Length: 509
Image (cartoon, helix red, strand yellow):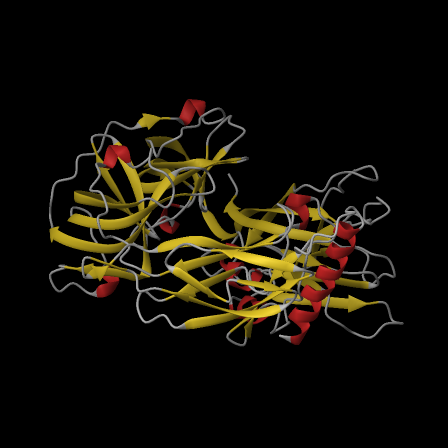
């Protein structure tokens, strides 16, 4: 608290100097006013009082809503004030939540401090019952009730409710109250075909698409028939498609991890919010038709929440695939940056073995990678001490630093038949130095006694960082085949830093 007060006082002195330097009058009202707190929260009843400091260089007054009491309601210079809120009641029952600003006012519009006062209440008192078709047009934070809504599809975060071609995403949190579920386990939440009443808040996601955050769900019945609208097939227009609602769509293409690739298209379809009951892993490498709900465009992908997937047969046999997306909890600790995507040389890159910066519950990102069967190589210039040189990004890996080099050995793959010809592919990118020079990275793939050279980037200095797809044909692989990816300079005094993502091993045609 002493540090906060010192900072506020310093800001006050600086501000005071600015204002007094521009004024020639002798007005005793404050030219600068600051508060020690931007907001205060109170319970709906028996809220008590809270104390804040007001810092000023002269006289100030208070403007407050009628349900807030500030003592004293005027003052001079720096003073301590108490704030209280009246019980939030109407007609003998708790009223809606409320929030208004208390203003500490000095000489003019430049010399005020606002403190937002928030008080709990019955969020759903007098809330309107709305039709599903009207949700999109509501203001964000509108509190609503939906009745007799039918669950059309499950998602990882909740479910989709649909009616007459209108689809609305609903999210469920750990605090959502669910009743009338007929004794089903709490983790079941809701099921497709449930008819439900919902109390929720309307919000918009980063794609400006509406969704509702559920606070209360009452399951009225189960087993209702679900009629899906005719899907809009966006396969041929994937590169230009967009919508401002959650349209029900269809995409035909090849499933590649959590992505559907459409032949000839620049954009691909990213499958998001995948429900636990939809097994897409078994269809990896298959031609599929996916039905789902449009979730926005984030180039180079169109995002879709899946409802169902039809298997059209094998396109390629995938023996191994790794996009490192499961590293998200470890990447989020610091959080780690996105050097390649953002072309940001200063992006945060915690060491994969750091429990504080890349660890969850005492388990590091490296621990989990090793458990999955990966191995790591580290070398350094003989004049240096051995040290960590493998780092975490969101969600991929970075290798090496000046005078330190690193590599990776992929896990053994149990289901490759003997003497199978395979194709290894991965995305990589060299690092750029502050001067604009591109690190002279020359990657190689080592399989047993064989070494395969990866074409260099061929970039001029100053080139923007971007992913490069590498591909290597490897003959006669089996369950004991181990694949190493590293650079040729081993060890070296120079900086040979590089990034790795999206590893895949398929059967060669």
